[in-house]
Length: 255
Image (cartoon, rainbow, N blue to C red; front, side, top):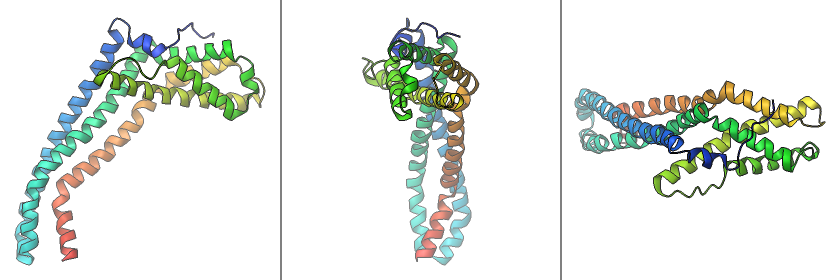
């Protein structure tokens, strides 16, 4: 299969498509960031409520052994009451933003074939301007060349948009650059190994990357985020609900 004809600056051209792609980004990124931030805030309130119930159940015993420590913890719980929900708002909002970027990338790929178009543009430029010479370059130099053409296909990092929209698009660009670079370099190394150091077939390189995108795009984008979410939930809920007992243990050990 020959690479499709694709114009330079693919990301900018797709995101500027009559508002459609830009609306896709706007629909996924801010919405998920806000919803996850709200969820983190509510989860923080729930964790604080559980911690207060646990504190009330054990505060009497702590007061009997060390009234000063109990009084200090009693006063500190009001700080935690304010702090934990705010931490949840920020932490889960940031997670929601990253998840929104991942879903926006998936949507752009489903609607416009964004990642495949970037790969096609990169391969086409390599074929026109580097051609067979790529096969004769040392591996490190060939990888540097690939990275340069990937960035050229994605256009200027300064997308001309300012404010929140420009920052979101630049972050989306960085996400896609990282994924495409990983897939192309991995496919290039595999082709070098398969050919035993001989010539590299750019069509095979393109097909290998497209196959990788089709099979593992969702897993690659969301897999690490799902793990991040599990860690975030365990730490946040555990510390948010159990801070009192942890602080009580520390006070007891240091007194």
